[in-house]
Length: 529
Image 1 (spheres, helix red, strand yellow):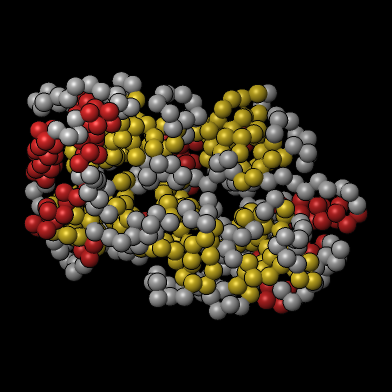
Image 2 (spheres, rainbow, N blue to C red):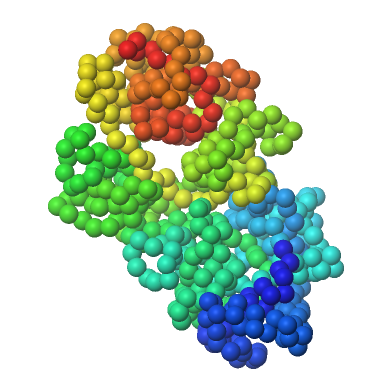
């Protein structure tokens, strides 16, 4: 995007002031120190000065030429989606070879074009990484140099092996949002005091602006292009926590509102097996943790800390996608010509099966279909999806405690019984709550304990009971979902608080999700009250 002259002046002055403060611009003219808050006034007062405009334009051109000179053979990423994948090997069908991402307008040093032994891949260097990208997204030669000027911004390049990104310009517990990797670049928005830079944190879900250290040993500042963002597990996963704790249990741990086991009365969430969180303190054998949106207490012997936690984090981190729009179409194939067969919802985190350029394949559920029967692809255009490595985190869950009458007690008991098996395995065709069940086997077995006989598969279960609207559904009602052919193939049990428990897939096992994590097609009351 080409910025208006006034904005160029502001950003360049910001950059030069930052360079001066970091001791990085001794060989260049240094702008008079000015705070981010008064730079608009500085420019406004002189906006009519043709001399100032001329100097700003000259300086902009100098910075552009200097930025371009850093590349021997410049390549410029041009993509309609929010990002493309940067891979260690030229193979788009292996999610394990993704080492980073490149956003539209990012610059690369072309090492081989086409790469040896390939037709559609280019070997490049960017953001401190060497790897491969598809040549269909790459502009080269003089066209790349001319187009690159549209994407030039004041940027900070990370020099440190690890550097935390914080929500406020200070080093305190609780304000860590994520971490940078060595070689990455971020747009500089301004300076906060002498120790922090304000940056654009557009790859962190739900965050637009954040802060990093401005120390000369940690960063350098220059005018230039964006480059690759790393998927380095050690830096991206471990360093997003101030005091990492990882669940040592294979299934779920109860999170409580206070450090005591009071049965179901003080349960406020579930801490999944190998989930991550920040340890905030310790009290009488209980750890106070913050994980996702939940802050509460777990038994300390069930949570790893220190080196043990780091080892578990590296072993169990996974690629996850978070939806950033209210409703996003899910398609059977990675193409807009493929019909949308369901929708996914904002802020829900989904495990990623595969990641193609412009598309992400989600692990929704297997249901009564064999795994692999249906694709679940979402587009990454317009920043619809944030994809990164991470640990799963806590799930909000408050056991049903409605004891107003016998019918309500029966429903709450059923829900609490079903949630005991969260974390247990999914087995297609299975009906065991402990050794493995599929979605309809899970609901059939749970309901049988409460005197309800259901057919074996979800399609037939959806014809039982009484139809219920989403406004009137109650804990214990069954929620049904359909496959790409519109046939019911999945079922879960509504547990209240907008959540459903279901036997999801081989990858996820029995889990708790939002009730509309994908579009429901039917809700049925099979309990009869």
